[in-house]
Length: 233
Ligand code: PGA
Image (cartoon, rainbow, N blue to C red; front, side):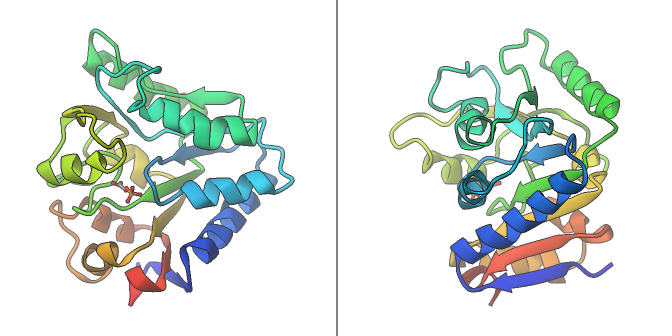
């Protein structure tokens, strides 16, 4: 299966195109389940969606990942980031989230996976690309059947996440939607911007599919990549 790669001039035009795809999905299915990444890449897309006249009140926002042991009030909470960037501005009322304080993280992951199944799976996954090829916090090596689970973050992820909270320690472990959940999404949308993602995007699209680049598994199903010129050329 060849990925559909759409190259846009700028991160802003990536955001417009990605917002078009999300808008089309939610107009066709107002109660769609959307797997929603945080991170820097999709922020312009969510801001663009918030400018549109959309009723997102019935969609279910499914959290992609979160840090373990970080409460919602902590500025590093990815749930807090999801709330501020997506849930509140878009008037979303249904959220399926991780419990980052669960005494038994494994059980929390099983409950999350079961809740995703009860939703009927994911209609649209909105994904960013880790500099090391991770999806969510499915760190290399992760294969296509890696389940929802708690993980120890790689050095590469610790380094790149450090830029989100200047001066604060980056948590070292996390909960992530499994590769199985991500890859089963009916529509998979990968957003990639910036020259620093050029090499990893090339590996995702052109090198053999490998657990060392978890995002490369996206190519085994239908995939739309929306990238800016800096990342794609
Ligand atoms: P970024 O993060 O959007 O901030 O580049 C992507 C990721 O690490 O998954």
